[in-house]
Image (cartoon, rainbow, N blue to C red; front, side):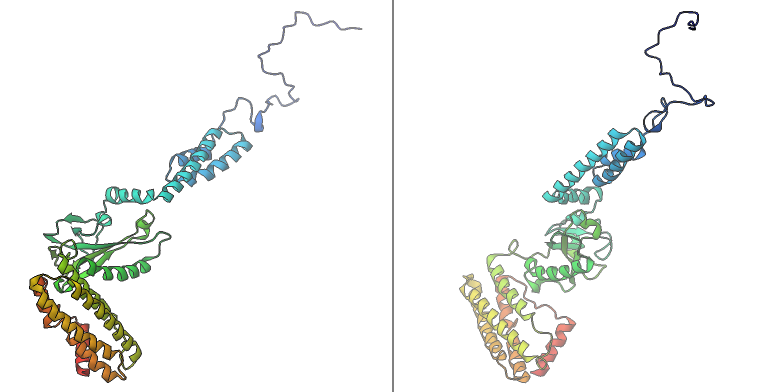
Length: 385
């Protein structure tokens, strides 16, 4: 027996209508779910890490910061079905590009140039861009805050004068102690290249230096700035202390180069006494003898102006006598004999002949005052003689 169809005409199915789903009995609120278990038609949230990755990727000075959240966001989006995949990819790509850009900047030295701009512009730290020959005024004094200085002409009053700039090698920050050691070694050795005439140096002038900090090192700062300043914090300097080939004539440079070479050799005297280490003192006396020979040759070969020939000739004769005594000291058999020749040798150094030659060449003619330590050493040597 057949059952007839219900009365009325059957309507055709709407191809655009939502699909018919058999709902379980007793659960009228049942709704079909889409991808990742999300109901169809529900609002889609944006992954927060994707947003963060895009923002950090745009900030090129933090290139790697956007890479990690971008990768995590992509993984979360695959599992949760959230939106933001494009932002996560863009943030990751920008981060890779930022890393590549920084690699190029560091390898080409562009970071150092950027640091110069930071020093002069953003931070306004003029002391970090001082150059050899610059004079400046430091509102905080040389022993205070020197981060902001004012360049001024050297002919007037000023707090400091730059006589050398030492560039440190790259690499990791070596530490304040190591940089201080380098500054001590380099700055004191370079001062006589800038101010060759030690007799013209005022007694109240000392050596100071500015050094890179751990923070400035990160931006490429590698400069130790060597400075002349007044040891009296209440006083300053007036006029330039520069005395080298840029301010002296050829005759003065030749004379001072010979004098500085001898001074450098004399400053290498052993710290121990001849009684404690006679061999070391004899070896040092031999080196002084050799340096004297070289400098005597320089003074003899140079063509001095007419007014300086006789004075310089008298100085050469004194240096020959000094060289003879240094030779005898280098072969002394005991400390007493060594002291005898040591004292005579020093008697010919910076004596009347030196003063006469300096006057003839237009150089400072007053010997510098001895420090307390030098006075004591001189008294001890005179007592031994």
